[in-house]
Length: 428
Image 1: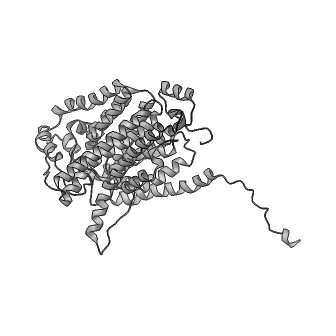
Image 2: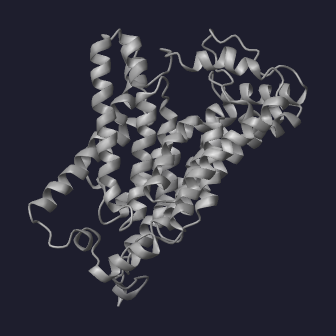
Image 3: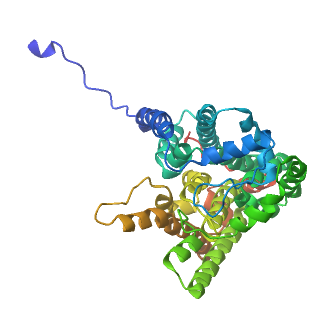
């Protein structure tokens, strides 16, 4: 009789992993977002990317020469062209930097959240699935997102622009996709190599729009920008230099450690060849699996820019997010551990400085992204080569159908429609 008092029946064995994962991921995601915005970004850091942009926009509004900085100092400099200056000039209408900075940080945080939601949908999952909160938690834990908010730079807006560009290409909206890409190129020319993606898809209007937007806006902005001539005379030569401060590119590594020119050139050619192999290999899926082609190729191209240009900084690794989402795909380089090791090296929010070896710790913090970018590129290239070898060895009777888990008719229909391939039913 006593054993029936204040007792409950055995719980039903109805465990739903998706619900449990969502229950754990949402509080973590919300807590991380609040912490990054209310604590870290509010406190700021020694590095301040926003003040230079706001100050230049303010000079534009007040009709003072925009490019009046001393570029041999290592302080953050205003590096945008006159067209981008015109685009960003509304910031100068806010009279106080202290008033403008929180809104700019909030804008970038909002853009990151929207981009992750959009990438979740492009991957074939509902926002009610655990994919979205897990993506939010992981993204806001990375060095790239954290420093974008702390330094108050524009990378969050650019991530949304990248996502919109990929989504509009998938929807077969080439002009809109080209305009978005053109605006991204206007602000950061590092996006220019992405023009190869609509080119490979034969979307000529997207290519034309992506080229026309920065050209036209610069032509319009040139006579409106005070001291525009200094952009060519002072800033362009500076942009061509390789600096050894917080520069994670291969060139920065070579300058910092005094790498012999021949070795630097050899590594440059090998890694550039790996970028070409990866993108050309992924192009085999440009019509049968457009999402895989666009997401991974964009990551390879932008990683290649970070690694092989004169300046690459770790927070640009945020542009790998579309490629990372392909881990949810049936076929992807993100199913291999070297690709994830490269991503972790780029994105992990780890500090390596210890009192016993402070200089070595700073080296690791600066150049671990260098190794990560190289690993990611090599992993993508190795994956496309391995798939090609497997196919040629007769391991698949129907390459497209086997890789995507679809029959011939489905592959043909999706290729004709130019739509993203959706996951199988039951994964939502």
